[in-house]
Image (cartoon, rainbow, N blue to C red; front, side, top):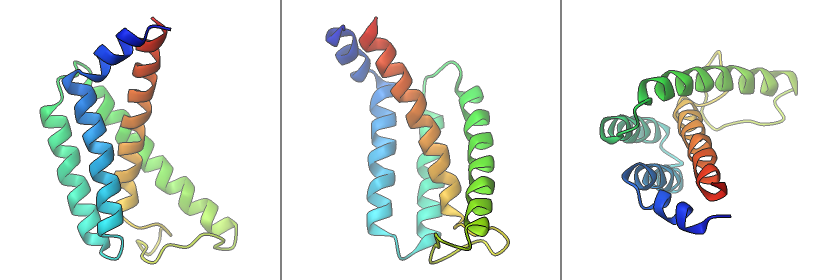
Length: 126
């Protein structure tokens, strides 16, 4: 295990951006859990800022993959909610889908975080 590689990886601009993305999204969930429109708008803004500031050479691929992941994640979660007789319910939902709109942005952030986790473990094991 190479902790120096991991530390160097965590000091990079991209790592700091992802960590800020995660922390801000957690903070917005805490502060605006009763205001779903705020959650959606704030998460869209921080995602746009992330992609504008990111220097990943593959950010278009990450964006497309994240949107695909979020789309199917929301569809699947809605299906599971419906098929489990609404064992899980959100205060707000999108009508036809049984999940709130802001959850789509959380799935995008989740995939970006998963890629970050993969990259950080790869740096650690180099």
